[in-house]
Each structure stands twice: as C-alpha cells, then as structure tokens.
Image 1 (cartoon, rainbow, N blue to C red):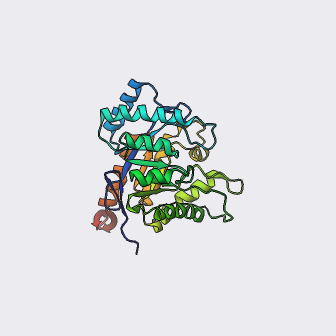
Image 2 (cartoon, rainbow, N blue to C red):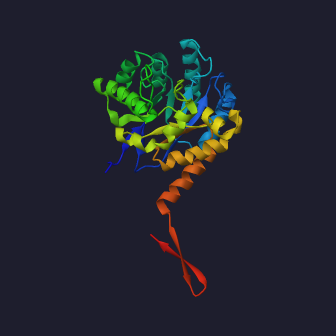
Image 3 (tube, one colour):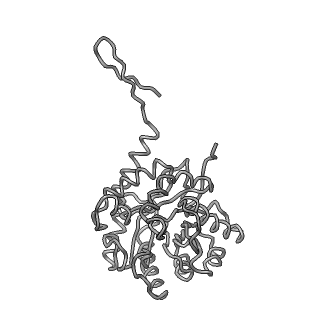
Length: 301
C-alpha cells in the first residue's frame, strides 16, 4: 500500500491530504508559445496578476524566457535576469502569494530568490546549469524538478525513462544534503522529442500512467496547458484554441493523483479542480432498483 505523499511548495503544504494547488503562468517573455500568457508592460502585468489572484491561484510562476523545445528562444542571461527581477518586484508589491521562478539558469534563480521567490521551477531537473545546485544549497527554496534526460536512453518505455530522469535529479539533491520534503516532481510534458517515439504519443503514455510517479514518494506537478500534443489530439493547431483540450487532460491528471496544476487559465482550471475534488470527496454510487414498475434511486456509500 502506497504511503500518503506530503511535501512543501514554498510555504504551502502539498500532497494527498491537501488541496490541489494551482500555479498561474506569468510569462514576461515575448517569445513564449502562448501569447495569452505574455505580459510585458507594467500595467498589463499588474492587471494580469490581480486577475489570476482573483481567479484563485495559489502560486504565481514567473518565466523570463520560453523553454519550448521547438522554438528558437535563446536570450542573454542578463536579459532573463532583468525580465524576471522587474516582474517579481512588481508582483511582491501587489500580493503575498508565493512566487515561483521558472528557470534553469543559476544566476536567474539566485536573483529571484534574493527578491523573495520561494520556489525554483527547473525544466532541466537541475541538469541545465552546473551552478544551480550551489544556489539551491545556499537559499534552500522549494523545487519543482522536471524530468530531463542528458542523453536519450535505449528503453522504449516513456514512463521508465521519466522515472529514471527524475531519480537522477533526486540523487543530485540527496548528495547535496537537500531536504527532499521540499521537492515536487514534474514529468515534463512536451519536452521529450525523439524520432523513435512520436512526442505526442510519449505525452499521452505518460499522462495515462501519472499515478506510477507516486513510486518516487514526492508530490506530482504537471504542466499540460495548451501544449502541442493537445493540438494533435484535438486538431486545434493554434494554442489559443486549446483550452477545452487542456481542461479535459487536466481532469485525467487529477484522477491520476496530481497535486499541482500549472496553467495559463486559472479560472476554468479552478472549476475543474473543485468539481473533481468534490466528486472524489462526496461521490454517491447510484443503484437503480425496480419496485412495482417505479424506479427508486438508493444512495450507496
């Protein structure tokens, strides 16, 4: 029997016994794939942050450069530092909601943590910058570590490869004497793109087996929102048209035990989380019983 999974995301408790947490994506990177999440002007950023707070987000995840693997998104570190720093200062003046920085660069993470960010969301699982571990040791933030292979592995089982990549990152943290209770794991939907397994098939196979990530004993986060595999499965080429597909896959992720949802669309995602949570907590199995030509519904608990 699997033990209850518990952890921390900044000052928030996450895990089986706690509410599903919603991370609002805030991109101050014009090159990001979904333009609906991009805010660059000061007033636009303030209005966007106020809106996602009103809609019920638990964490604000600030990204200063796109990490989409199919886009040309390289920018100087100094530019990313500047974008993220300006955004965090503005957000801190508006709210006390925990802030996450979406970066794999140590210099960006350090500056964000100095300004009050509580979480580092690293899409490379700490493998993209050799200096990141030192920053993590110095500041002791919470972490979202994504599955990332340094080199493709021979297995054709996507889940086995994701688990192996995540174990590598957890081992790095153990060697650094880091408290794993502050780690949330993410299978990194959309980032595994190899010729032998179509990337959209990879993503679907991982989503179908998300509950098996529980074997690592850490809370599970996922970023599904408006990603490319949804375009393939729904026929919606533009990210702007992928909301309903995103919500459908969010339902599947929740039913497979995900604890944190990272999204561009806080309000509809919050409704999905509340609906699925209510269903799990209060579901009633209805039994139809024929009695003298009438149907009676009895609650079976």
